[in-house]
Image (cartoon, rainbow, N blue to C red; front, side, top):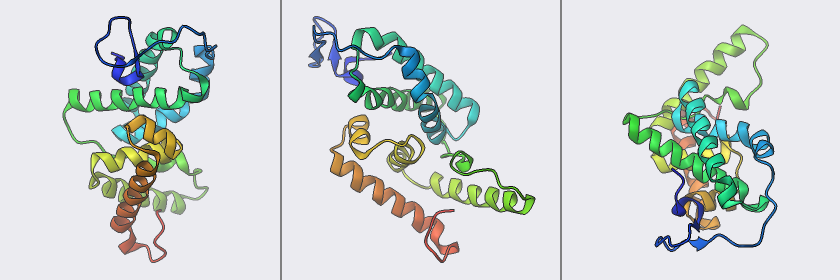
Length: 196
C-alpha cells in the first residue's frame, strides 16, 4: 500500500504530517510512458535487492501496481518521478523481505556486462559473479541498498538521498563507503583493486 510517508503527499484529513496534494495540475506523463522509461532500472534494482530473477519480477510488478494505483492521486512531477518510483520499489523490496523472512543475495551482474563470446570467458565471468555475490551477501542491508540504487538502478546521489531519506552528501559518502567495503571483500584476489 502506498502511504503518505512514501509519497510525501497526504489525503485530506491525513494526520501523518505530509503535505496536501497541490491543486495545480502538474501534467504528469502518461503512466504507460513512466513504465516504458523505468521498467528496466526498477527491475534491475529489484534484482539487486532480491538476488532472484523470478522474485525481482514479482517485486517490480508490485512496484508498478502500487505506483499505478497512486499515480493519479499523487501526480508526481517529472523531476520527482524517479525518486518517487524507486522509493516505492525500495519499500516493496523491504516488504517482500519481511514477508519471506530469509536472507537475500545481491545482483546477477550479467545485466551490466555483455555476454562473453567464448566458453572460457563465460566460465570466468560466472566465477567472478559468484565471488561478487558472495561478497555482497556479507554487506549490510543498507550497503546493498545503496549499491543497488546506484549501480543497478542508475540513480543519482540526490535521487538515492530522496529514496532513502538521506541527504545527498550522505548518500554519496555512504555509497562510496559501501563500494569500498565491497572492494575490500573482493580485492584480495584482484591486484588492480577493481570489481570483476
